[in-house]
Amino acid sequence: MEGDLEKPKVKGINQKKCIRLHFVDLGRSVIDSKGKGGSKLNKILSLVLFLVLVTLIIAGCSKAQETSERNASEGPSDNFNKEGMPIVDEEIELKFFARRSPVNGPYKDMSVFKEFEKLSNIKIEWNDVPQDGFDERKNLEYAAKKLPDAFYKAEISHAEAVKYGSSGLFIPLEDLLEEYAPNLTALFEQYPEIKSSITAPDGHIYALPAIVELDAARTEKFWVNKDWLDKLGLEEPTKPEELVDVLTAFKNDDPNGNASKMKFH
Image (cartoon, rainbow, N blue to C red; front, side, top):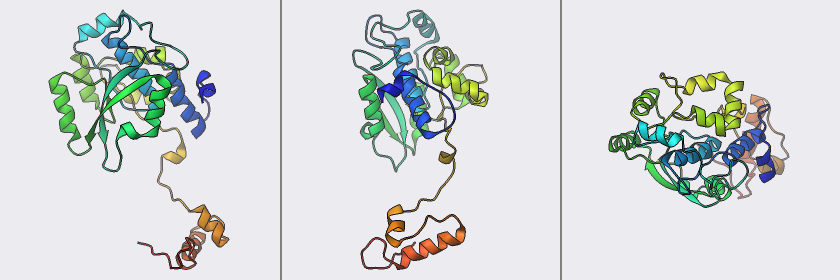
């Protein structure tokens, strides 16, 4: 996996390259929040580049606009590695405020995030918020003006971005992306409509989207149990009438070996 991380490429559209893109930006994008001269901006940089990989919706947060501007001149700390893994030498922790749908388990238990934490040396403290009532909880976070390091799957609107960006709760991300996220920047060049769609009316980018390049991931699809096909000596169906024949065989010929007819609901 680390070999793939070293030389990012943005060519073509296929699943392998999409996955590699996400890991590469993760490997080249995070700044320390606790090392020498560690600042709020450092923490935001860590957050921004860490999450570009995972294709999340995120927003950098700051207590006030003047604080963001002051910290911007400090730059990354000595704990930050611009290339390769880990992203930071000494472990840091970021707090995420995340929307979770009823069908999902806790984010902290998901293998993909565990792997990112292991590779990057960045630990995530998750605040999983149920989908029902999420907007109300998010508004309370805004009102308290004590934001997490990131909002995940928060569906931040342009109106929210401009309102809280102009007040200093969010910071513009476009310069950080250009500096630390080469693959996302390349996608912006390849698909300009992506960048324009996430640019707020004031001209800044405050949140990142989930980008799906793989055509197969964009549409609903049917799946067929290949083991059942093999057991019954059937070919994969390519026409509607062939699918009917396969489903009829599944129903009547006991492909799962429990000596009973399949029931479809």
